[in-house]
Image (cartoon, rainbow over all chains, first blue to last red; front, side, top):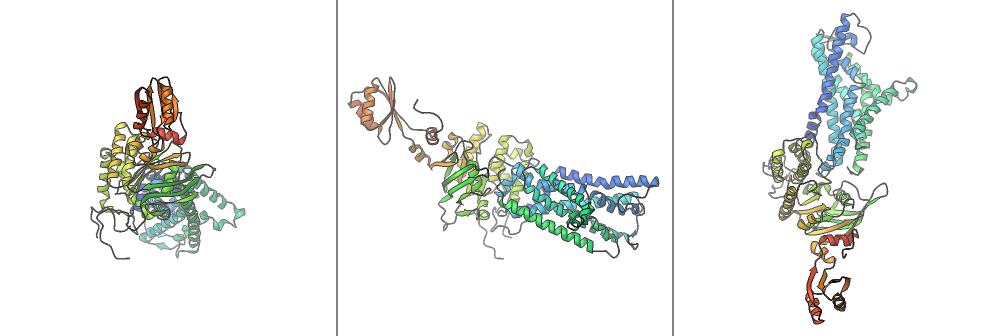
Length: 286
Length: 329
């Protein structure tokens, strides 16, 4: 190492530097609003768990979202149910907030120009922003899953888990499945992140970008619910979101999730490219 | 690829081989906004290395748009420019680290402290040593007199403190060129003096300074060179003295015989611009004032007072932009 603490300039620019990425992650994860959103997401399993606990005492176990019946047998299923419940709206909304903020937020307070004249390459800035949003999406999925596991264990019986296919796996293996489900959910939310990032390059008003992203997701979900246009359903991101249920079978059925991941990757490529095309040619006048 | 050159003790100096007599060269730089409005109209800018260049013009004359183009924030519609000898925006990655900029007022994250804001910008710079970051941030805050408020959130800063933080960001590392857009905006007189002193200090250290301002006294006090913008056009540029010389020096004679005095002045080839009951005024041009005195005395004109009025920058500015009033009245 030839750089002492008194050296100001590096011999040559750092080819790979994680400083800005770390700074971005710090910015996203220490922002009070973003932390509050994660806290609210953690409340979902609590409410759900309490509701089911009360409901089971009243003997009303049937109906409701997927896996809800299994929760009273094994608390671990609360994690899955919580993800199923938060995935249509709460999780995409959380991602939309952070993604909408990403470029539009910097533009609205003028820090976009400060960063660009440092200089930060525009493509690099986008890549870092996307990485930070996806990290936040992963954290959001992880928070819901972890809170689900903890509340489930606190309120319901634990032990070896009976899968949907009928086979029984150990608690340790089941926890690994929970982690994989959270990872799949995070990957699905990365598609939302890419959409949000693109929208965020279009405006200097972060709230508009957040709202537009959320509306885009809800619109896709509505299209996904109309059977008359089922021809386009395989191309809709949300169509594959709940495919993670296949991780609760033995052996794990991969084809649905593979499909989902491919569609998701396509969304990331398309909207990532659009965001890139927009930001690299945009006049920064804010 | 793996070979590391020796550590360089001093900041990057402009290389000897590059044709780098100018810190900034713009050729026909033009910005037409989508609405059709021409914000900057074919400007040819020459900012000499080592100068303190005052970029003068009223608000809305295209100064900030020009600065945005120079730094690569917006793309010119026509024309091109070099910064520190490299064509932009191609050379941005190499050149911009050597350029400290404060564009259109300070811009920071309101929910971060001053120090954290500087750390964020420093983290974005891939050419500086991360290990010296804390020391450099401390030093630049000290330099702008913001150490005491470094831990306060930016949201709670006064306009003057915000401006200082903007300057601190430009001083996070040694710079060859500083582009400062209205740096004394919002500062109290004391702060203004401090910032001007800082600019002189930076210039003395060898940095070229490109200072945009709508304040004539500011430019007159700190700048060696001036470029005058008006309605998107660069209508004049040069050293401060050259620019002052562009407007003619005037002579004003207070006398009891203004008619006779006017005749004498006209006889010397001076353009008489006005006479009154007890005075006559004329453009002096290249004529020496001694000759005027001599001719008046020879013609028997009683001279009570003879004043040579050197134009101040305001007169030049008014005569160049055509904005304002008839100075003679």
